[in-house]
Length: 350
Ligand SMILES: Nc1nc2c(ncn2[C@@H]2O[C@H](COP(=O)(O)OP(=O)(O)OP(=O)(O)O)[C@@H](O)[C@H]2O)c(=O)[nH]1
Image 1 (tube, protein in one colour):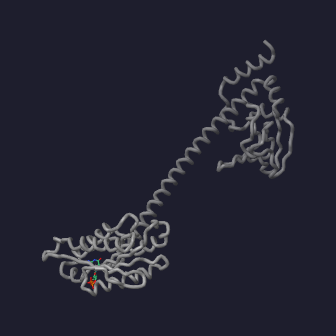
Image 2 (tube, helix red, strand yellow):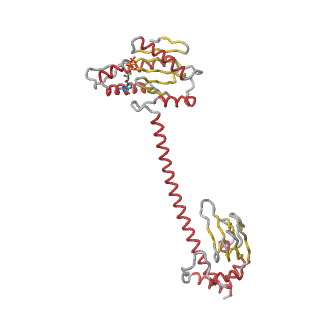
Image 3 (tube, protein in one colour):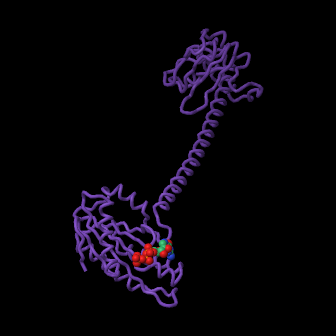
């Protein structure tokens, strides 16, 4: 057997031999190993903050810390490591040849290093196989342990991220629930005044081509009497039933809302005055047909409706004022009917 082959088989044997003495720190060299590397390694003095190598650089040598400390900075949120006296770093390059550094190595105070390059290391394998095997086993155990630690810490980070993501999702759901609640009338489930105003702010996004905006204001007739005669609970039922009929008259792009008390509004996109009147007629007919068994004396309800076609260049205040004026007309005629205002004038349609 050649001397190289002998040393290789000796190395292989030593690699499978008895475990390392547990008293040594994972990266700490035994006295024999340290003496060996100190003898063959090239000395280098570094001062505080001096960069020994950078992440991404191609590595060529392993380093042994003779005195002082070196900080390894892995970045990406991974914890830094401090390498102290009689410990080593940058060894992977000697085991796998061409290897890019995965950390920055920076002197943590003044330090003395010994540098062992590939050629020297191969020479040591041939001449000191037993010590080298011991060193390599130490390194491999350390690398495997680090790898497992890294996997654990990534798992933990992943779990933390999932928890954070979950709570963000929950917050988003809570926020949208809260937002929906603030915009919704509790009694009727329709949009409230705030919801309508928020819709008006984004009106442009919802406009259908070939339509005009129109507004119906729907107001219960003599609602105070209904409350007085049948009680507030029946009064609430009446409000819910009216809300349902206003909702039924709305298309998917329209906004039915309860503005407050017994006043409802339906902001619509219609083809013109004819459709506006048809919707008003639908609500009036449906409300007339409502029955409320909760009121023993029997109860029929009616509504008055004021409608307006909304001028594109006017705003909510003008649209509302036109529809309100029409509603006033409808009430003045005794209720249970509707009037429509076209921009600039109010006229009776029924
Ligand atoms: N049951 C019930 N009553 C309400 C609610 N909000 C407001 N009201 C009552 O609605 C009534 C509205 O009275 P008015 O504004 O005088 O209107 P009206 O009696 O319908 O008179 P006209 O509109 O002129 O026909 C008041 O008596 C309020 O107390 C509610 O949420 N539930």
